[in-house]
Image (cartoon, rainbow, N blue to C red; front, side, top):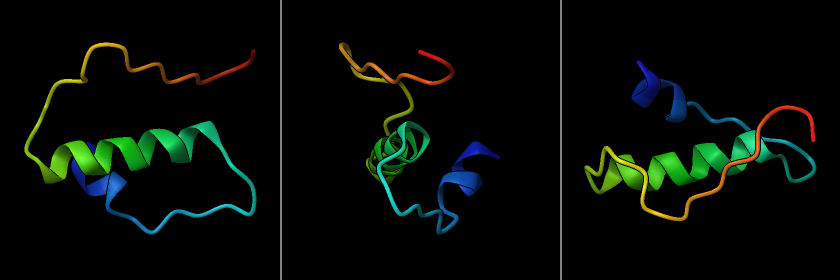
Length: 47
């Protein structure tokens, strides 16, 4: 289900950490990599 969600055409007028994460996941799924590489830091939620 997550693979289908990241294929949706999300967009924003400014940078957003959720969209950054979706872009990262799209690339990983495209390469059939189903684990996050070491050192990936996705900041979600309140700072």
